[in-house]
Image 1 (cartoon, rainbow, N blue to C red):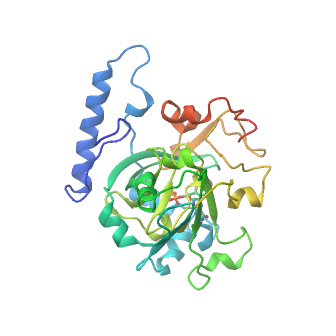
Image 2: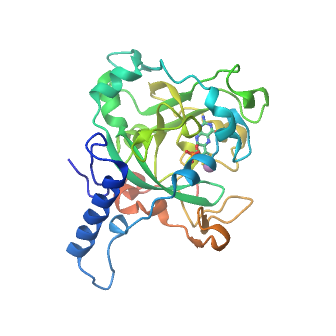
Length: 300
Ligand SMILES: Nc1nc2c(c(=O)[nH]1)N[C@H]1C(S)=C(S)[C@@H](COP(=O)(O)O)O[C@H]1N2
Ligand SMILES: [Mo]
């Protein structure tokens, strides 16, 4: 079933190249259907151009492997990603360790072409493969008392040279409100361009929440806990004045040390363009309702 912000393709059916041709045709069709009125095509139908495999896999933030953008690509190859299991616990009917291969056998893998906006004010467009987080949580059976979802990254000092530095309080942890976690835009990514997700991008599975700053999209997840309390998050613990729990992309709420009104698009080389940042990173139509009545300057 294709949502209107994506185009569902089973990556085993087609080569990445074929998938991309196909998707362009679908997007062209969608935009044509809307017509070329004054407003033009809505944001979701805009023909996003994906960044190259090289951009996406060589310019990374994964501090467990170092804090330079090139460190994860250099250092993360030693991470053991198979076998892998994700513990799902807390307020669920079926807590336990879920084997990654068994999860994959049950999930429908889709392609999602998403904007990706880092809090550092750079952005990319990434063709993820993955499944909706809601479908994974269904395996465990979310109980009605659950209000939040907490996530944890694997912590392996032997394989992660960056964790000897106290840049963050390891393991890296993140969290979402349950309704954010269950939103159909929220996915667990397991691939990029139809290939297994590289270690530096968070193999074998990582969260992707496209309307939030990139640091919410926690990598190499080993634990998901359903809870009734707002969970601690790594960047908020490190600097609560600069990084809030919500961290929705918002051009009107600046970082205390820099503007969030614009972003640098990675991949433009010398002519790398600065473009306006969009409310909720361009997904306002889909997600603004989650925050109705909230003061987004307070709940940043
Ligand atoms: N475990 C973990 N997850 C993480 C990070 C990290 O340092 N450790 N960095 C975050 C930040 S700041 C960003 S911008 C994205 C980068 O994802 P990418 O390298 O796939 O572009 O991962 C996020 N997830
Ligand atoms: Mo980021």
